[in-house]
Image 1: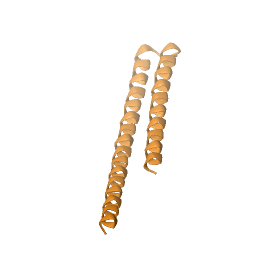
Image 2 (image 1 turned 135 degrees about the vertical axis):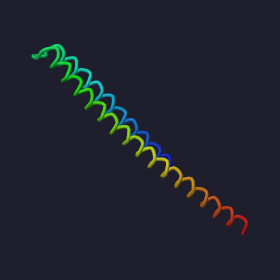
Image 3 (image 1 turned 180 degrees about the vertical axis):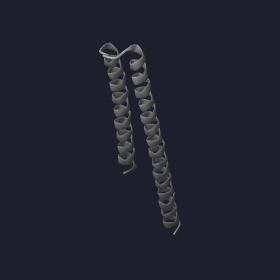
Image 4 (image 1 turned 90 degrees about the vertical axis):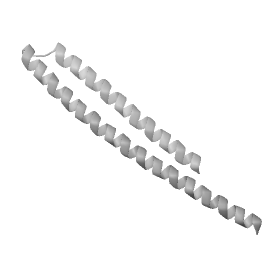
Length: 98
């Protein structure tokens, strides 16, 4: 049972990592296209890119907080599993002793 939980956690981590990589890739491609096809002056383009970089920074900060929250949840689940396993072990030991 714990193997299934661990596998689900790894799958969720892989899914989040994949999404983050695709987000960053899209941001880089978008910035490159914006620079190449910018219909505005250099000053306006730099302002636009600065604003977009700031938005990207905020998005990454939010994602980081999501990762921290998910990590805390996984830690708590792991701790609960260990506590449950220890309790089952104690019950089994008491049954064996009689």
